[in-house]
Length: 195
Image (cartoon, rainbow, N blue to C red; front, side, top):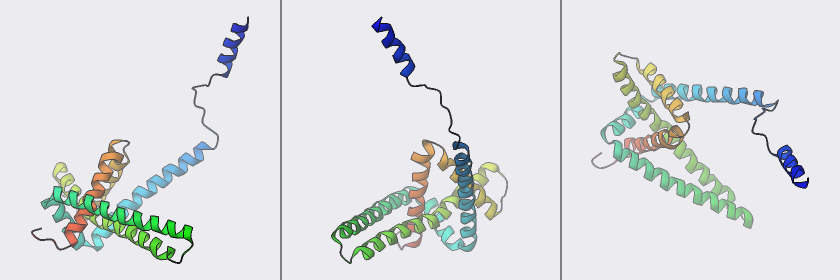
């Protein structure tokens, strides 16, 4: 008799595998989708705008990427690694100084923020070259002429959507695009021997 009660209570208290959405989940989902769509539209608009305003920077980054893709990737990887380590060091030092209550906190934290801004700005500017090269490839596959801004818009949209793809986009497409973009701006704007 005791064993049948144990089995009955075990069945009653076992967790249910039916997922019941909470009542407040739908508005959060709608806002999440709206923010995602706004982010994609902003990225595409930013790339089109910067490509129109800074065509020289775009062309230098694209040329670096087209001529030396492996060196561009390695340069981006090295640049991200070095600047990331510098930013992490400056940030960690600002946190230690915060604990010690000294006056160096703003300068260390400011240095970490400045390194972050340089990395983001360099990646955005180099991203124009990556998108330009991707747009040229799309134009070849499409086999019809596209205007420069239209080509840029389609390439930016394709890169944004590919980067959002779970697994492959997050682990391969996005890091590869970021490394190529940062390497393209480093190789395109900094003087290098033999380019």
